[in-house]
Length: 194
Image (cartoon, rainbow, N blue to C red; front, side, top):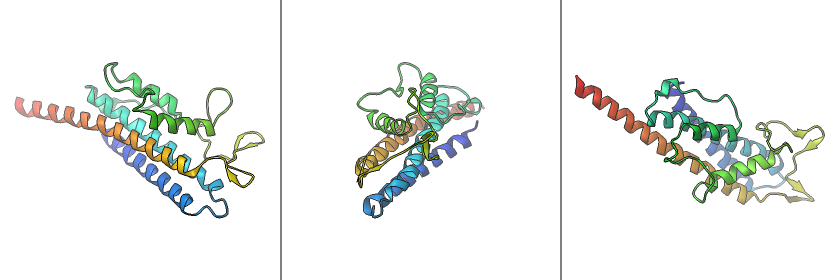
């Protein structure tokens, strides 16, 4: 893993966040023909991808900020947000800002709850690829419109996506700033020894 990958993860996370918001904006402006039935999936997929990529980028930044070599950080090869949250929290000391559900982190966890609800596998887990495939399980389709009424309020989903993605972007930035300070301090230390 490299610093370049960390920045790419973060840049891609930002891109997926923007894409989700723009898709939701288009639905809020005009949902004639129930476009939300189809477009909600790419919007949710993009928000899931954004969180996933930011969690991976944050793990690299957090490791560097706590004195570890960022080039040797191993990133979990998973799309499961619970596993990525656990992996990130495991590399952060108890006294620091771990991602646990509380009032401040509610935007992130509320969005994750929505994603897990939509992708529920009825065994306590979720299908992380729920937004890429049409069936939850054999014969069971996702449903966002019932009797010509949306099951979910698009404005609330838009708000969940914006708030959750903004939170994780800010959390990444916090750790990235710390990593930048550690990197600068190490560079200064090397210069002073010369």
